[in-house]
Amino acid sequence: MTEGDPQKPKNFAERLRELRGATQGETGGDGKGRGTPQTPAGWVFRLSIELVAGLVVGGGIGWFLDRWLGTKPIMLLIFFALGAAAGMLNVIRAAKEMNRDLGGGSDGK
Image (cartoon, rainbow, N blue to C red; front, side, top):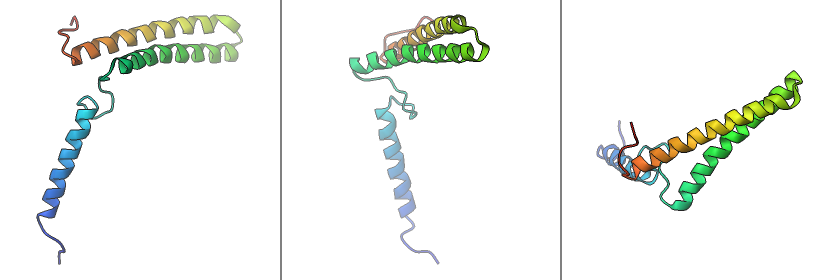
């Protein structure tokens, strides 16, 4: 014994597909929320977060290792430098991705 119209699931599936398509269009097309920012302020924010994240993670690991091993400034300096390098690589990678997504041509690959 079924209740309701048999066409209702089809309509629901179509509406769900339309909503997913609209959501993917807002996030850059991949549906994961990591699309290309649409404004220059968004670009600056994303690139600055990429750089700061590398510095904070590298500095945090170095600080933790210094406290754990008792080698006060050396690990902090080493991992801060590694974090800075990783942050710069992430900024370059993100800039290439944004350039590719905005139709700026090939990214050198």
